[in-house]
Image (cartoon, rainbow, N blue to C red):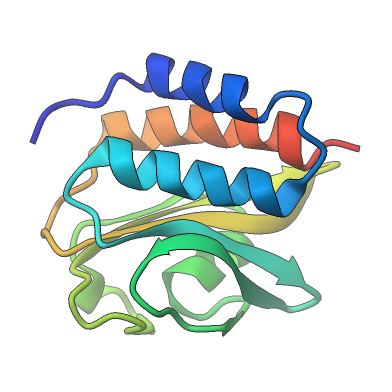
Length: 153
């Protein structure tokens, strides 16, 4: 699997969504961009926070869980702890929610508005150990672009 040029990915994302005032359309295009760019994925998309629940947002991939309580699974943990979750083997993650039995590794990055978690970027792979520290840093930079253009007031 080739390394991803995250600087280019962030620039592409910014050019795609800057000045576009349609959050759902932006998240839809971003999920497609991520899915097409990263490789080795079976799901890339967003869950958006509604109270104490994450609700399925735009994504690319197989059918997914619609609601995830904060604190449950990888997504709910990332949102509750406000901390990126890089999980090399989801089957070893306590409380993992198997929306797609083909997923073996996952990375989830919290997204913010005004310092509050408003959702997560969730990316799954059928490969074990798919995501690296380089992916974590690059996707956190991408999350900053998303926050700036989609979730800013």
